[in-house]
Length: 118
Image (cartoon, rainbow, N blue to C red; front, side):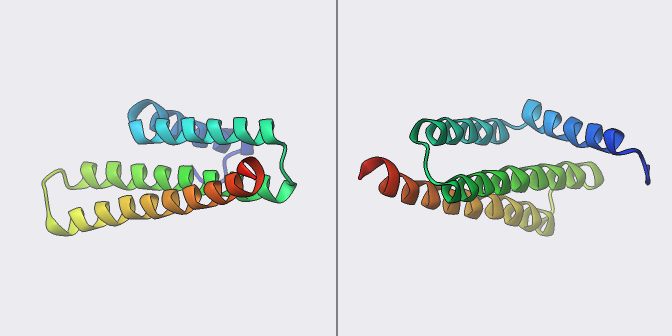
């Protein structure tokens, strides 16, 4: 699988995103939130710095969810039985997604306060 052509590697990545979208409700919800952010940004036409900050936050949340999904599926495949250490690994990955999501909400609220409410 190493040293594949760029478009082949990009196809693998798109298949992963597609699988997460089909199988993970939280990923679909985060994609919907990202779409909402894009609509608000398009409507309010803020400075480019806000575009960069909000899109970076959305991208990090979606990427974290993809990592979380990959970790969960790998762990469930390798060790389907419940184990305290596996629970900690899964909970930590979910916690990372939660922290990034809360930070993204904080940045979005700051954006709203500066650009929409005032």
